[in-house]
Image (cartoon, rainbow, N blue to C red; front, top):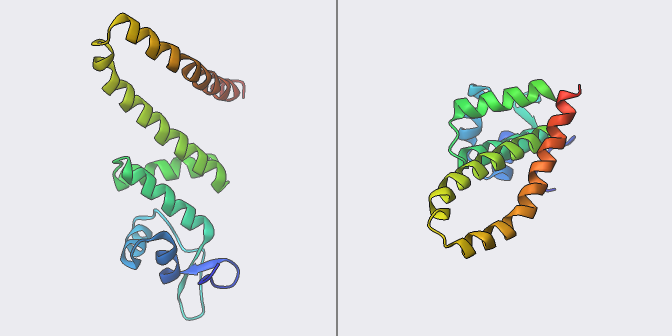
Length: 149
């Protein structure tokens, strides 16, 4: 990967380019505590890890879902307190985003479904039921793992 300093650490400009955001945004997120440098060089340049790039991607996803920066910080802190593994925190964040989107979609669909003819409603149900049941079963397995701990 071009532009990465040795040891897979990014200087602020490199991180900004890789994330597609401005250096000023990186400074702002650092001040807010959303991200933090991995270490500093002898000349006091901040160096950020590749995990920071993943965190910036999650921040962007959450911003697109209309979360405020305070809400984003709360969620990132919550997932970090649960697991240090960035892959796990990324998946938990994605799951949370998907569940929020699903909740919004269901609320938008509800009034529309009541306007369908019975035959149309049965068709919708036939198409959505298998995927919905699989989704519910997956969430149930996940929840059972947590409750059995």
